[in-house]
Image (cartoon, rainbow, N blue to C red; front, side, top):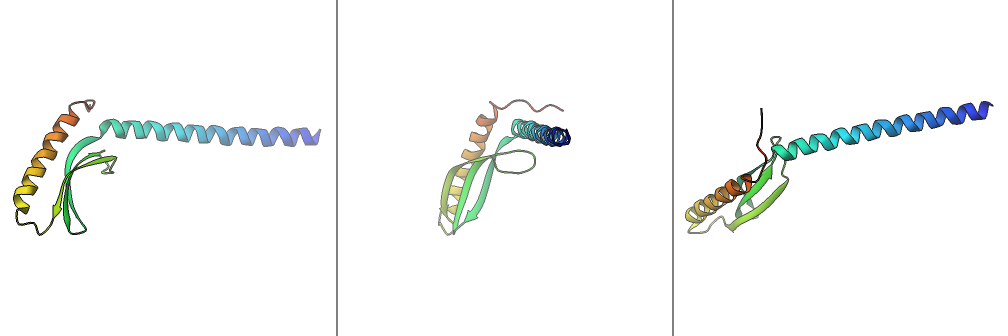
Length: 108
């Protein structure tokens, strides 16, 4: 009889742990879905290995990087750096505008 009571207790604890893990996983998935829906495409640029990289990046409000597409990459010392940067920036902003047209509206 005592063995059955111990087994029932152990099974109850295992079931409780499984329910808590499932609830935590569901909450994390809901949060990730909300952040993904709130994400927007934005122009982004940075220096990497002596090059300037201009991209269009999908980022949620918390600033994480979900996805990134390189628009242009050119040497920092390029004689035509300013022209290339402005052209790449304009292209990235145009792409972001069109990519955001398919994103859901942000409410409230």
